[in-house]
Image (cartoon, rainbow, N blue to C red; front, side, top):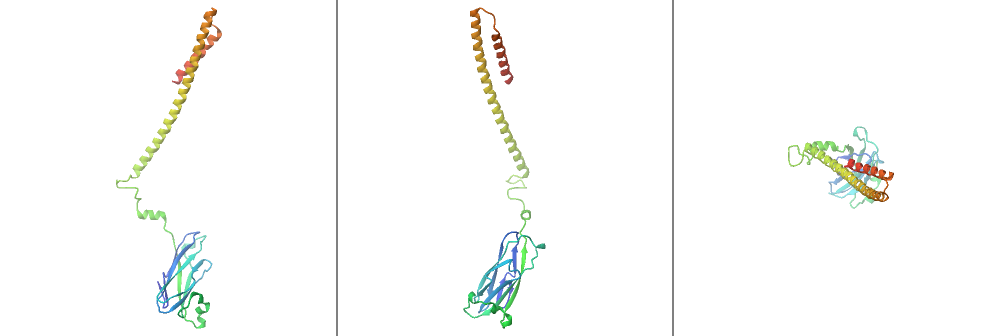
Length: 238
């Protein structure tokens, strides 16, 4: 806390958890410890970088006022996370009933004979905590037990993962075999149908040959050979 005769500010430093390309705000509470109306004004050495709301105002007797300081998003971090920016809090005793709209720059002019109290505030950048460091400090994850408790340890987890993978592979192999069996069954049925058709045609040729009293025709021999090839194909597949 920074303490003055008119106003005290909390905290005494403006701390920003620095992150690139992100707008960051921090609050400053001003406390009036007197029985008088006190006007204040907040200045900064880098007005383009910070936005102060409100930057001027009146703190009633024995009361407080909150000021929000917002740092614009930064494209790069400063060397060693050190910031040279500073703020100046000026406060002056004013007449009772004065409002923020009545404040003028002349009120904070020392050369005009006004008693102006000043308090300097530094800017401090805080590095955001590392996720990896937080994990190492907090200890092992609650989902993993290294003492053989209720949860599976790392070795058991790896074993389960392998078993799961092998199960999936077995399911894939089974599916491939099932598809092959289905295909072979269809081919077998087609071959059997073709064989039955050829047998029927052979019977017809035999009858025609016996009626005509002639010898075995060339077509009959070809049909016999084709039937043998089909039967051999069936036996090979099964």
